[in-house]
Image (cartoon, rainbow, N blue to C red; front, side, top):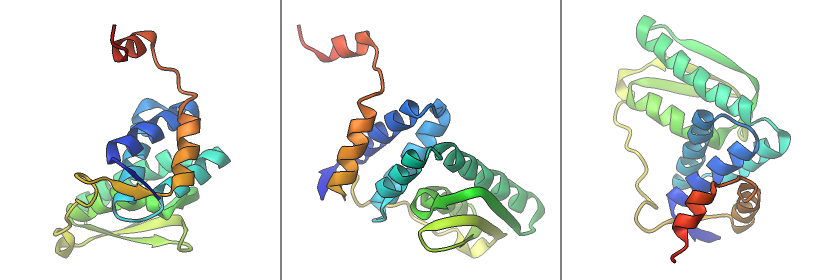
Length: 172
């Protein structure tokens, strides 16, 4: 295991997404999802790397947006909504979005096997509002799988950084 700051996870995953031609907004969304998954003790990096290797990061971004749309529908109508994803998504990558929906009184029930989720069922549940964001790891770091972190770091190195940013980092 390797101890890292959550911002390091966000930075590395963001750059990995950009290398895979994921748009900047979706890249940030996925990076934040992976960091929160690691903060709550699930294998966010492993799930992310499996999607990266399969070329299915866009499917993850679409699933995250579908949950947002479903939440809006539930809150507007009060009726449950079932969302079927185009392809299965690693469960840890959904944790952040589902916790956010839960904090706004929308409960969720993932469908499919434990590791990968085929869809989500959302309901209006006023009793679900008391959700606290994970705090473990913000001050002292979070332990992540060393091999997964190294693989992600290698992929992230392919992301081009502007010369002005690099020059600013090197003292004269």
